[in-house]
Amino acid sequence: MMKFFRVIMLSINASLIVALLLSYLSGLVNPAYKIGVVIYYFGLGYPVLVLLNLGFIFFWIYRKRWFFVFSLVALAIGYNTLKDTIPLRFSKQELAPPGTLKVLTYNVGGFSFTRDYSKNARNLLAYVNGTFPDIICLQEVSLPYNSRRVSFNEDSLFNTLKAYPYKANYFPWVRKSSRMGSFIFSKYPILRKGVYEVGEGRSEHALFADIDVNGKTIRVVTVHLNSFRLSPIQNSLYDELSVKDQAELTSTMKHIVKSIGRGAHYRGRQVQRLKEYMDECPFPIVLTGDFNDTPGTYTYRKLKKGLTDAFVENGSGLGATYNGNYPSFRIDYILYSSCLKSYGYERHKVDFSDHYPVSTYIDLSACK
Image (cartoon, rainbow, N blue to C red; front, side, top):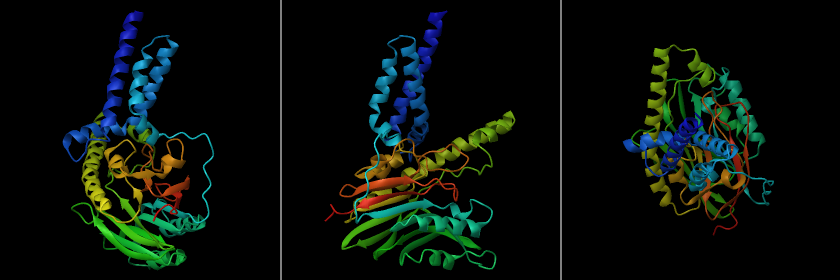
């Protein structure tokens, strides 16, 4: 009986090890291709696979069996992925020296996290103002055309952020009553601004601004890559699924899986083009925004190549930035060129959007 139990546990352990190894391929295989989408699902489940393999390590140690080595080796193979996903830091963050540049990025979710759009927009921006960044990157900024319906509009946005005289913006989503897009606000002069077209549609874009910081030029890029386009839910995913009958549950799960795969496919195409644009940039880059993807995926690996992740350098733990009712992951980032250095990464846990803002201090002193 004990032998049978051990065989079953070894089989489960082996399956989890194979799944973990496949998750590492998620960062290498482009989901723009069908095989890449299949592997992508393993990459998305990477944090869970790590925990399950850790569980088996402790299980086999408790049972005084050497089988724990298999999971241990599998985890060691993916050390770089583990370091990017769950960095651990046991010392305090290094304080930013004088003269550094504070950069904050925030997907504001259309200012629609609460029913009172105008109040939420004002509270959100008041909070952002109170963190005193030098550069603000905002995604999913929704602004109405008809100011009689709401008390917050484009003029309100500019008045609230009047400490930032330089700005760049792009509105790819234009509707009858409103428009939505991205903004870069800066306390320093913007020398040039533009848009990278990274897909077939107008919504597939990246906004950039070349900013003169005391005689040194950096290019700040902010992106909002293709989302999963999952249906909004009012409660946790578990609660939503638990109240459905079998047919409805099956239909919902199919929709979720299909939406995740479709989003990954489009992002795979977007990051290819975005990376080509950034590689041609003559200035140091600060890349910010909502990647809609986790650190183990192709999106992150492709964009991070040649850049440094502010969270990995200064943060600790999972650092989840999604604030909605689906399972939370780190999908908002600040990456920067190797000649730059970051200090004091912070995830701001405030409930004004389905994302948390993140910020860091950037040191330009080593750049020419």
